[in-house]
Image (cartoon, rainbow over all chains, first blue to last red; front, side):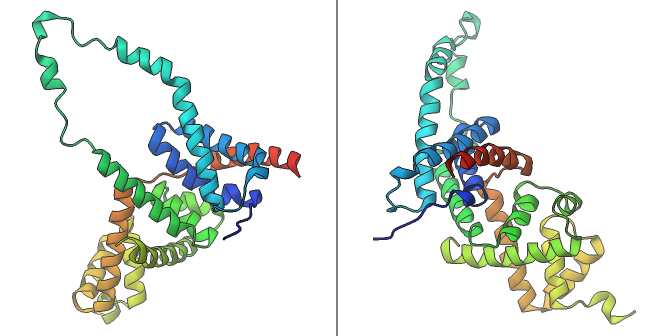
Amino acid sequence: MANHQLNPNNWIDLYSDYLFNYTISRVNDREIAQDLVSETFLAGLKSMSNFKGEASERTWLISILKRKIIDYYRKINSNKGKAEVRMTYNSDTESEGDWLEERVADPFDMTAEDKMQNAELGDAIYGCLEKLPHKQAQVFKMKTILDYDTETICNELGITASNLWVLIHRARTALADCMEENWF
Amino acid sequence: MKKSFLFISCEEAKHICDKSQYGEATGWERIKLAIRLSWCRVTRAYSNRNNKLTDVVKNAEIECLKNDERKKIKQQFEQELMKHQ
C-alpha cells in the first residue's frame, strides 16, 4: 500500500491553483472560493495527525475542500431557500402564460454533462501542469489562464521577454505531450 | 529580396507559432509562418498540436489564483504553519 507523506510547506505552491479551480467551478464567486481554499489548508494543517497516508496529499486536501463546500452551501441554504420561495413569477394577470416560454431551457446553456466534461478536462490540465517545473507552470498560467500581457509578467517575475517565450515554448510542448497521453 | 526575409528556420517558426497563440505575432511574422507551414511538415505538426492545446485550455475554462490572491492565502497559512512547527 502506498504510504504518502504530508509536506505542508509545499501545499500553497503545489495545490492552491488546483483547489481554487475546483472550488470556483462550484461556488462561482472568486472571493468565496479563495476563503474556502484558505480554510481548507488551515483545516488540513489542524488535522494532519488524521492523515493515514493511503491517499495522495492532493486527494486528501480535496476531500477536506469538498466538506468545506458542502458546509458553505449548508450555511447559506436557509437564505437561498427563502430567495427561491420569494421568487413569485409574475402575479400580473396580463402576462399570464408568459412564464412557460420564459422557462423553456436555453439551448446555449451548459448542460450538466458539459460541465462535468469541463471539470474532467480541467483536472487533466492541472494534472499535467503539476508535472512542469514551477517557473514554466507559473508563466504558462499567467499568460494563458490569467491572460496577462508579456510586459506585466516580465516585470512581475523579473525575466526578459525572450526568457518568457522560452518558458512558454517548453511549457506548451510538455503540456501537449502530457495531454496527448491523457486526453487527446 | 534576401532569402531570410521570407524563409525562416523551424525554431523561429515555432516561436512565431507560440506568439500567435496569444495574438502577439505581427502580420509580417504570420506571413513568414504561413510560408513555412506550406512546405514544412514538422512546423505543421507543431502548429496543429499548439492550436489544439490552445482550444483545449480555452474550452476547459480553467481558473487560477492571481499572484496577490495566492500571496494572501500563503501569508495566512504560513502564520498558522509557524505555530505548528
